[in-house]
Length: 184
Image (cartoon, rainbow, N blue to C red):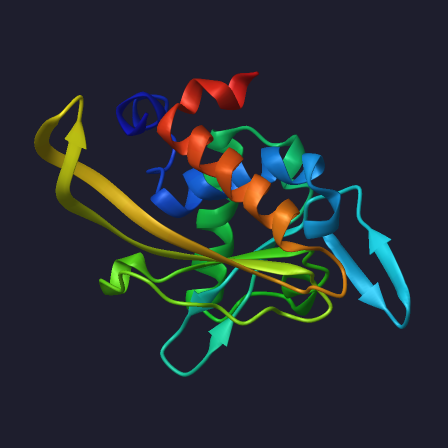
């Protein structure tokens, strides 16, 4: 993917961009994970405004990729890179950090294997993503090296339940293991 995008002058595609693309495509099928609680009312959002937790030297911010469900992988990667560059140079506008409907927090680049992220209110859920590790796996009775990544979904049970969260995680796992499914 990276070779093809860079050949056309595009940005490098990170694991976070790939995750963002998969999550953005999936969330419309799991509406209570892409929702908010306002008083006693649950608001189901049409758009997936995907927050990406970003660590700067002094603090953590969450830039938002707006209408991510309508973007292809290359567009998400470019928008993510633009937002991260703006954040690092302290040029991110307040509007670019507002209105998220779901957040991804990826600590894989810090070699964190597993963690639980805290939901950003009023959002209903947040996905915590650990590092990709080479580990022994068994395939057809044979032990071999394989890549694995741990993810944890924190969800507000006032809005959704464990069954919807589990179905979402199962679908996300399938997408990441078989990327062609994203096209369906």
